[in-house]
Amino acid sequence: MRKYLNAEIMQQSMKLKQMGADVTVINSKLCYITFDLSGFKVSYVYNVNKKNKYFLERIKPYPLPLREFDNEDDVIEIINIDLDQFRNAIKSHNIDSFITIARKLDSVFHKFEDLFLYYNLPEEETKRLYDEILEMEKDIERIKETSDRICYDKDPEYLK
Amino acid sequence: MSSHLTIAVGIFSITYMVIMSEKLHRTVVALFGAVLMLLFSVEGQEQAVHHIDANTIGLLIGMMIIVSILKRTGIFEYLAIRSAKIAEGDPWKILVMLSGITAISSALLDNVTTILLIVPVTLVITDTMKINPIPFIITETMMSNIGGTATLIGDPPNIMIGSAVGLSFLDFVINLAPVVVVVFFVNLFILKVIYKTKMLANADQKHAVMSLDEKLAINDVPLLKKGGLVMAITIAGFMLHAQLGYESATIALFGASLFLLISKIDPEEILLEIEWTTIFFFAALFILVGALEDVGVIEFLAEKMVELTQGDIATSSVVILFGSSVASAFLDNIPFVATMIPLLQNFGLQTGGNIDVLWWSLALGACLGGNGTLVGASANVIASGIVEKHGKRLSFMEYFKVGFPLMLVSVCIAYGYIVIRYL
Image: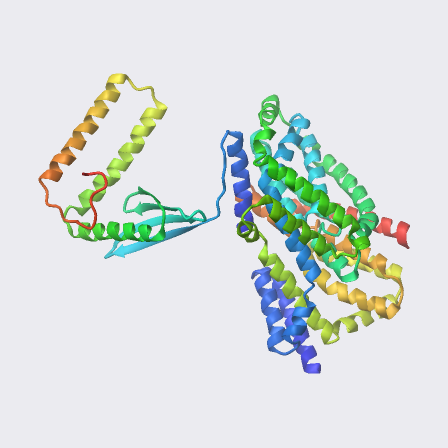
């Protein structure tokens, strides 16, 4: 298996180098982790490389790049907190709406990316989309102020 | 002793059959068989370890380390692109250039390694030109088996023969390289007849390959220079190892450790790339065949062979050449050669004459025979696996239609060479 992987990597890196890339191949391990919270699946992948960098990403219930960590304890801690938040969340009657909205946001982002990369957008339309996003952001801030906080294990990363 | 004999033959035969059936990984089967020899007290642990040929194992490990570092330089990608550009995008000329690179590389590295390096870069060239890669892959696979026949280090059967018999790198070059050169060109000519009209490219396809930049393929120029130095020292060492009184493994391990030292690459990264399954397969085979030797089976078979051929070297040589080529076309040639070596050594002891020609017949038969079918050599299996992962299919029959007749032609040339030169 390793032989075939190396052969594949050799082909890909040769093609990428012809495209102008600087390719570095690092030996690493990929860990695939799944939790079953009473039928609600939460999955992560993290990659550990020889330079002691850990790249963690949540893939279920919806994909979310979680970032790079310097040590294993931080990875476990983040998964633990994330998992606790989902344990609380699944008790809420809003969980289905939450997942639906999260997936929708992910899909909207990809559509926006396609729109931007495949079409020449009129400036006024771009501005309008931006204003709508700002409006939604304000809505989130406003709802936060009027809702009870339920998780105190760590502070929110984006919603200060 | 007679119960040991029965047990040893039983374990060996079952192990051999399971390996040939390819139902289980050959290394696992060979290791299990070897351990059974110990569990049933056919041979003791110390004795078993003593049977493992350190020279073969050392040579394989040494060369694997050198290649693992060398491939990081991007030299094979560079050579493939450079060849395609020298050939000005003409598919047949590219194939000729890549065949030459494959045969020469295979003479200096083992066949599987050569295929693992040359097939991926070939696929990039054929992808770029949007042409069918199959003629390239079949030709390269055959050329790797042909090129590997020329030297002591080119093919595992040669490594085992050289190590067991004490034949040097130069002995192999002097005795096998001339016929290998003839076989190479005759095969190339026949392949030209088969493929030339199918290998066409229009101006756009040629332009696509001409626009590749070979300089982008080189990853690390200082490492490439160090690699060139290490390869030069190692090849010179192989040329002189007999005169210097060193085993070939000592030369390979010197080259490997020197390269590790001057490359400053993390040794853990490199040692991870060694094909440990192949190394363990060899070690287990040596134990299995050693057990057969210890219980007298090999001696018995050698007596039968002397009876059958009446000790005539010419007859034995023909039987070994054609027999080993047909066997190697369908079976794994490594266990076959591992068994044949002690058999021929015993044959030599019983007839008392010079049996060098039998070693050359065995090497030519076992190495060239691998070209007969898709399962005839590990290099063929690996090449077809890479192609399959790439989304194409190289079927047994597609290979067989080209490979088997060409293998027969090659073995007939080898037979003519043996008759003219030695008999």
